[in-house]
Image (cartoon, rainbow over all chains, first blue to last red):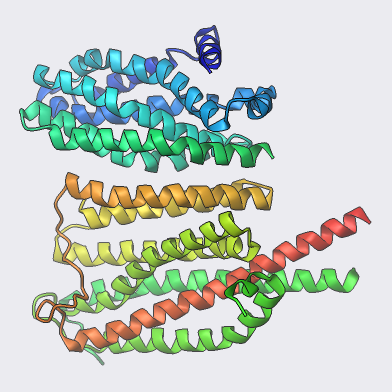
Length: 218
Length: 47
Length: 241
């Protein structure tokens, strides 16, 4: 399993693997928003939590179809399906690799993007914390969506239609953590909900994703 | 004639939109069913 | 005699063919009756004549949720017991559910414009209906995107399962995010909170009508799907011969 994780990480970081594209997309989004809403710091600070979380969702979405598509094309997914490790494990590992290559860089870079959007300094730790807790759920849900659409032509558009509604609870609680953090309020409740969603998703979605994958490999 | 008062436009628009949508889905269902039945009958006659 | 006998397509076609005229007649009678009766109700002292919209809005909203639940049950039946009729019924129900959601949203917006002074408000109930509509759209899109019918049934079944959990989760997550403008349940059991009988009885009739309308449409659409499936099977056999 560790070998599989390392293989996926190497593939993603090698040239053409798309590593960093998500980050660049996030940067562009944070650059575009001030052009759209105007450069006033107050307005930006007000909408920054939402923009940062929506940006994270979209950046995550960009690389989702890569989770299974390449392996499906060259047949290595069929090999993995017959390998001794359960398919649920494969799914979990692939989602973990996706998180390490897109989610984790977003978490690390988020404070910088927060600066761009005039996010108050008091909210920055909450930004990092909420992203750290929330983004694994995004990768795992995305793996489910990718498993459903893996065999399809024009799957990319459908993938975003299927996955984005599933991101709504994470988005609500993630942005709420930052908003409350910025106001100095109590962040315990949304953080607990956010963590609860992530834990449930990590525990249950590998089974749904593996089931969908088995259907597509039939 | 029944008096709708100042909200006549609102009420009629709501009923109009809803009935249009309902009739649309009813028409689509019936038409698709008739099409499928005709195609199936033609196939069964040939086969 | 068990309920699973109706999973046989031939048996389903025969039974549904017998029920269908009654369902159509009942749906026509109750829907038209309920809506006409509702249209003739007196004006509400606060809402004026816009109260008449409730006879479409509430039944449509009720069916929008119930149809999704029915799709969930049908999907589970397919995933567990592999009855084709069940998967086809879930597929047949989805567009009707999407239309019901759209009607609930549209009538709500038209009513909200004079009453709340806005077409749209990010109120929990409104928002969760919008989310429900997105789930319907995704479900229908997935059905039309997958070519192999059995794979499509499996994948949409899983999507329906996961989507149900997340639709419910979103329903309560949005409560956390915004407090609502929307009034509470229209049909409360507690006396005093209930709407007056003048409005209640036409509403019951209209709800029954919408339910029967869905039943009739569901039977028609499932029959369509079975016929299409049979046609495809016959064509495949002919191509082989």
